[in-house]
Image (cartoon, rainbow, N blue to C red; front, side, top):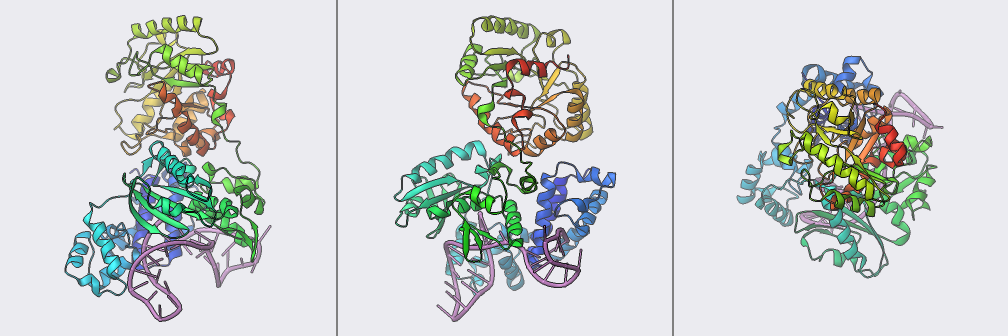
Length: 574
DNA sequence: GCCGTTTTCGGCCCGACTGTTTTCAGTCG
């Protein structure tokens, strides 16, 4: 039986929902949600920890009881508490929680008083007037429900960072024109550079007579206003995105920005630490009693707790707070430290631009090198190159390198890892490349064991240099294929193989957790764009955001190196 | 249900907005 951390986290989250409906102790409910979060970002599978006899209670948010439940699920695939809850409470009720305006208390009421337990039944109750009899269900709430139920049950989706960031920036620009706006910034998960975001969070510092809220609730792309207060408003755009705006005074901007940036887990942890010292933190400031000791900057907030500044990308309560106290925070990589791109395509395979155009564009970015990595023959759909075409391209690169100034084209290819673990180019051709970027492009649906074996087998080839988009995920489109990432990372460390962080907006693969695992194992990372056009070279920003979330520093990323230092790393296996 | 620089019991981050409330509960972030 294969029980993943995601399965266990899903079970904990479902327990939390059901307990919530049942009206259980909110802190008990929170414990399940916290544990679910811990599991989702934990680098090792609980299954292997249980097999090793590891003490699960040493994990944060996991105590004796939850450790026992994790073990139970790993061993049997089930959790008795969840089964019991499902028996007691109809799991259909969870659907009702998704309706705006309906929380656990109202679900409970609906069921107890009217036996309403499904969206269908709620619609009926709304039509036949029985909802009006429930205390607290006034005209406005009924209208809210009618509107919500009239629409197709719109699941709040997550948007790719790449899609939502420019919209957030555009709104920020529009609002900065409003009267009395001193500063306005994007906060929330976009500021933390998560790969996807559910909504846009904005925070503004304004003078008293500002008209920013009026502007916000009448933006050109507005669909509807969800909530409209003096300091906080919430809207939905025509494209369905939710946007929240918080307004504070100028000297409260730092703590407000911090509050709205989150993550929630980071804020809670920080506030707990503060309260132990008799300090209170909220969005308006850091206080000892009535006295405000900080508020105008995030740096001041951290300083008030005797901590160094923690970058937004790290604020996930994943050890950054301890690291801050120990002065062991990473010096996160910055875009300006990138000296080249190690994964780009040209019109030889499925790219839009010629070799020359790609080279010129990279040069304009100030890069010192650019690796040409067109697809190989097996990937027909992308016009993969056969060996003769590869050799032809290598000659072309040699010629170009003769004339280019200031930038060097590196000879490479995105070589298919075939299903038997061999590579799609012969060693005689591989030998003529500067290095090889290897990747899985088909047969995703095989067992974890087979997929892991396939890649480990391919790594035996001495010309295997970089493993590209290691898990094959496409955000919102395709789940990562089953892979024993611990085993892959271990092998990379052993063989000096590099892992790619692919910057394509729907890949961002390695993810943040895997980046951190790689770093801790001493495995180096290549942050690459996988560009299919000159324009795509700009995607490097996406990869850097993810790298920072993965605690990566300049020294962990090989394309921060000078060309000679880079070549030394790329050729170390030969 | 977790956790410990007052503690193994008694806390648990903190506040805005809405609706229907005459003082606050529910929902949301």
